[in-house]
Length: 166
Image 1 (tube, one colour):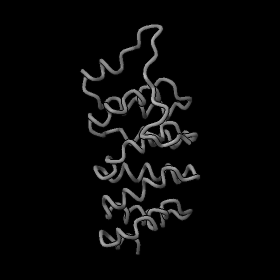
Image 2 (tube, one colour):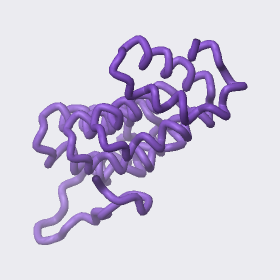
Image 3 (cartoon, rainbow, N blue to C red):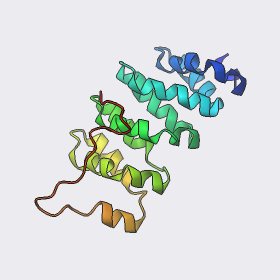
Image 4 (spheres, one colour):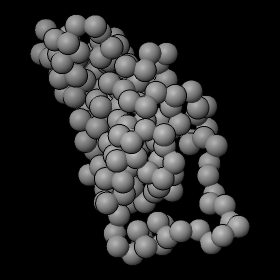
């Protein structure tokens, strides 16, 4: 029933998006189908789940935004905030979000993706960050990914977009 709601149900997007964290896989799939059909309103409701207390819900929110394509990519800043998540699965999905994203989007978050690639304790996170960085143009990659001269520190934001880290 959720998947049949489509754009007219955008007013109920928050309620439907909350089902992305349901224990029943069939409910999660139906909620994702419905949210995808809601476009921008669905994406906004999913963004609110990026700070949910349950890491599985946060990971599902990132995956859902990735599935939304352009509507989800508008929220890249909120997803990039999850690069600092305590859960490696959330960090992995946040890096995966940027795989195949537009080069301009990847460029904006390139330093953080590089940090994940080089420093994250989880090999899956490092691998996804490296894969995302492959989307950079050769010129930007050469500049962004060049090693820092000894004794200099790369600028690193404490948080992205003013959203506190979890």
